[in-house]
Image 1: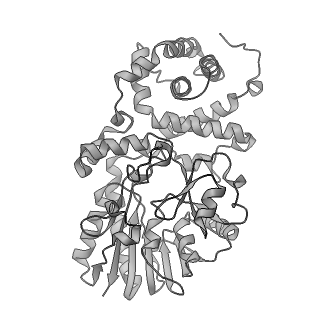
Image 2: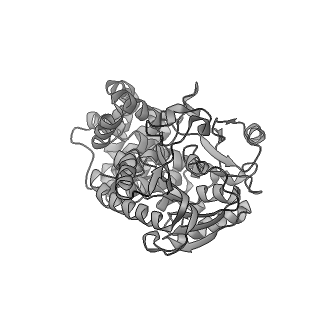
Image 3: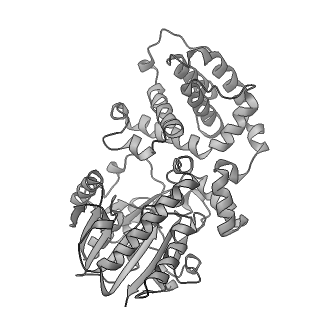
Length: 446
């Protein structure tokens, strides 16, 4: 079973994908680097571009599976290791996690999962001494792993305890468990289409959701899917597509999209005929927005600045998608669960307050403000709007009606705001169910 030390790692099929996956997992768990930063843009992993499409997809699935099952994997390895995971060699930890994830949840032969994990540690100077340990532990995992996983079959174990406690307090234990179950599934691909959603659902072997989003399970490079090159659609979670639709008919109106990048909502506003100014403090993220708009044949003016200090407007409408904890996106971005902590919320709440106050200043009398966050934390949603309404008497809530959401009354709060949970939109096939967790409120300026 022991691999030959004379085979160059670059010649072993699948090893490069696993090495990059190990680097990225180490980046999340030990260096607090986001998946987006490591997979895209100037700071992306330097070897990513050398991978084939197949290996790139494998690498992404390895990373996502480990991060989605991190609590279960931690329990499993603690039972298989007498002294715990080696702390002086991150590559040994990531090799164990990747190997166990393949054995338990991926369609990879056990011998290949073990062999390639051993090769990973052999190629690392600090971890090489643990090659025998990795080999032995993963062999035991192949024999004994499934019963050990069954010992802790609990939806909550794969989320940080502080987050579980918050969700139980905010939504009740039943909802919190349903949310955790939904997060445990790999999400489908959601697309916002310019027109003729039923036709595109057929072409993409998917279905049209009540809200108009096209949902499919197609995998592979997005750029190779029908409709990409002609700009017929863009990738956007079904929940993320709701806030921009709350404006109603905005054709010809002036709209500021604050904190606009990556631009899915901006594209919705432009497609609806609004004159859009996209504001974001990151010039790099705005550059990617412009590239996407070129593909979509849409137009928006872009301003790279801090929205809290911007003197634009006044505007007929403002969309504020505020920076937040992003806990509603864990099903698509499993790194969020392990990069965020409760202490991060104070600074974000202060920023949200400043952005809301600035939005009121930039809005014309009679104009509409839609505030949203991709967070499940009430401080970043319901409580932020309660505070704004208390301090800004000219702002009034415009309750959302079920008819505006295709009759999905369960998405509307008692106050008339929108609150989506990962367990909403159930489906007979779990892989076609769920939404990101979002909050949205619609206000008007008297």
